Image (cartoon, rainbow, N blue to C red; front, side, top):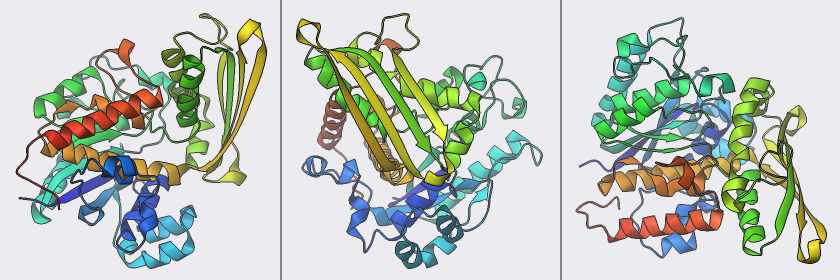
Length: 397
């Protein structure tokens, strides 16, 4: 029975992908890899789960550039030069497979070839579970809600220029074809109704959407405090500056709208009302700006106007500075470890209890989506404890 995990990243050579690759490449001698990982936290360690060890995770994936990961990591300038050099030998052997290109071959040909590749690699490398992680760039808002007349079951009918056929959905369809689980770490709507039905028919696990690591993470920590203290939030203004490739993509207004919607969903769910009134377009504002000097170092400012006893007006101001990919990479590893353990325990379909990791968590009922970090974390811990209680004849260790 296989002991390894295959983690295939759609966007392997990008900022998050290269950071994950460096981290896993030095995990056997650098304990700092565990920082930022929920699966290595004290509270989760006490549960005693047999997560796949770092050394069991085999990295692979796709990118528009096919330079090796040593070059990618050097160019990204996110991880320290010392760590990149220590990981050099492993990184030089990591070369992305070519991402789908519409001018080169049909979607059917590409999915069939890559699916066969994944299955063969699993067979040859003692791999127990395969996971595809979607790290594709943010796609235009105008493409997100189009999914008419797409027959995802029939690969021969798929064309990238057809309405409803996007790169994120192609990678989800590849996961289904390859019997791999799927993590959507982007704000792109990969999970159409027909694709979800196919995934559940095949018994694969999937979760998403849009990794929650910085400003929205802090927002979903603080907003429940206002709710529980019964302080009225009159307005919440958020702005972000970042200079990495994600920032370049989001400088396109259509793509920025996709991201902004994802970042704007949480407050009404947590507070039970929209700041400024139900019809207000301005009570909760989210702004994103591309600012090249910052690179992967993202900065966020929040201004919160709120009212308390006797209608007294008050404010809170937050300044958040973080390394975008350094925050995201450990969460992707967490999700991979959890989804593989859940699969080994017999789980199938949508993993609802992983909402803690996402800005726009998927739900079976959109009215019941949880955004509050305390509620999400409680649900995650309950889910992990339930996994521990499930009898199994297989352990990773």
